Every structure is written in C-alpha cells, then in structure tokens.
Length: 169
Image 1 (cartoon, rainbow, N blue to C red):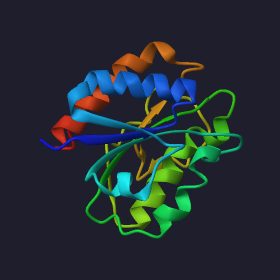
Image 2 (cartoon, one colour; image 1 turned 90 degrees about the horizontal axis):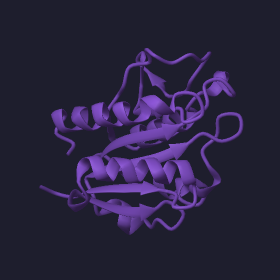
Image 3 (cartoon, rainbow, N blue to C red; image 1 turned 60 degrees about the horizontal axis):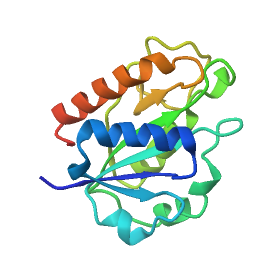
Image 4 (tube, rainbow, N blue to C red; image 1 turned 30 degrees about the horizontal axis):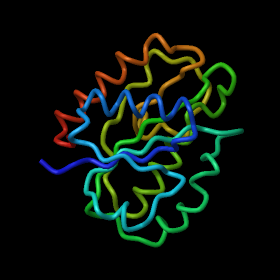
C-alpha cells in the first residue's frame, strides 16, 4: 500500500491537533506528514493520495499559509491525484461562510483535474451558507471545535472508515 501525504500547518494548533488525530486513526506508518507552511511542489507531486487540513479564516478565506503554494497548484496538472480535505470552521460565529476553506481548496484541485473523496453529510450542523458544499454534501470533513468538539472524534473515525471504503487508504 502506498503512503498517504498529509499537509497541514504545524503552527495552526487546532488544525495540527486534528491532523495528529487523523494520523493516529489511520496509522502512523501509512502517513507522511508535511508542514503546509513549508510545502514544495516536489513533495506535493510525489503522492497520489493527499489529505489536506485547512481552516477558514476571516470571512471565508484560506489561511495565509497557503498563499505561497496556491499559485503553484494553479500551474500543475493534478489529474492522477486524489484529495481528502478536512477543515475547521465556526458555524455560530461565522454561519455565512462555515468551513469555506474546504470548498475553496476542493474547487482549486478539482479545476486542476484532481478527484476529491471523503464527502460528508451536512446534517447535524447549523449554519447559513458554506462554500464547502458541492452537490449537497461537504467536500470533506468539516469540524467545528468551537461548538461541536464532542462530535469530533466520532466524525474523524467515520470519515477515515469512509476513506478506507473508497479505496483512498
């Protein structure tokens, strides 16, 4: 089995903690971890299956640590890549753009030919709008540590099982 790459900011505490939970759930021997703030195109292109951790900043933006790398993604063909995306948002504090980072990143890689896997149900959340919704489902695992942290472990476990069934892991 080929390893999966996981990219998240080592300096974004909640995203990093959840990335570590994901790694522990999958199995440390199956995942190579990279700091999104230091990512290179070579690291990114080495893997067929990539997990990306993104939070949503301000009024529905990707975190600034992706600013350097997003232009590089726009210039490469990702047709042989599969992405699973997890993200953090605050559905009560920012109900009009809950977990938009997931949708922004999903659309970015889809436009480059990648396949996004690990779509999840929007049921159980309370928000107004989200760019993370594609065809009625979240384009990844959307977590809310501010308001639903007690649901996080179960959501991660369910998502990892789904990724296994989809042949991603």
